[in-house]
View 1 (cartoon, rainbow, N blue to C red):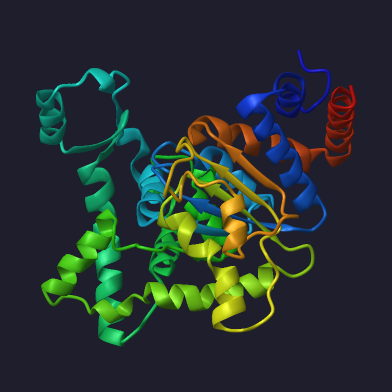
View 2 (cartoon, rainbow, N blue to C red):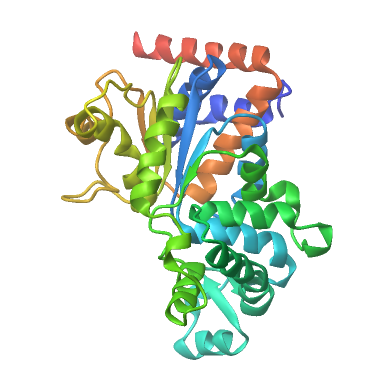
Length: 348
């Protein structure tokens, strides 16, 4: 039974004492320290987090000012939109671990595209969005326009109305980001369903490949975004999973320093949530210390690794942070009491 109006935060301070739970707790406290003091946070989102409905907590976190920039895979970008327009048409498969090849062949015949234990409906998601997005590409080709990949999705999601929604718009992080015009990069966007669809229309001559700005142009834009976001207390880096969503944006710091030969602040915080264990040559499983050698982090940067399932860890952290935003005085008191207790145990 919670004794404050912050039940999730209280649960964390009371129960999360050791191992991964301790790392989660300390990462949560440091995140709050950073943003309450005026710092900003940049998120890198890999995996299939949008299909796993991360927007339930990420969308309100964006609206409340807990997230200030994003790097996402093309799949996560489009799948947030799919959840908005086709949510009720998704089908879940909780016993997917026991499926045979024949079971998955039947799912294919149902025009469903399985993502672990859920599935994206071909007609209600891909084909419905295609009817809106492809004409946008064609107009851009005719007009000689060039935009970033996410800008087409921002425009699309902002023009939708309630008649298009099967999902809750308050739980669509793409919609929240578009309304806030949040800085965003989508590295490797070609590796997504709509990346493939776009390539097909380029091949058929319907669209010009040049209407989508390149990944190099994303990095040049990130140079400018980073300079703005890192003012004041600086900007932290919160990474879900590994791969290009994280690798691409974290490199902006050494690139500004060594390639542009300009002064730059290092990342002010680092946390990675991943079940990829530390191993030889594994970037996703590398400890944060390794990033010091690449001049992305420093010895003073608060660093955390939670080796756990992001679909469990991240909504818990965001829920606690939203509580902190709602009652910062009570949150500070709870965190201070927890830290005092920790310090006492360390002094024994």
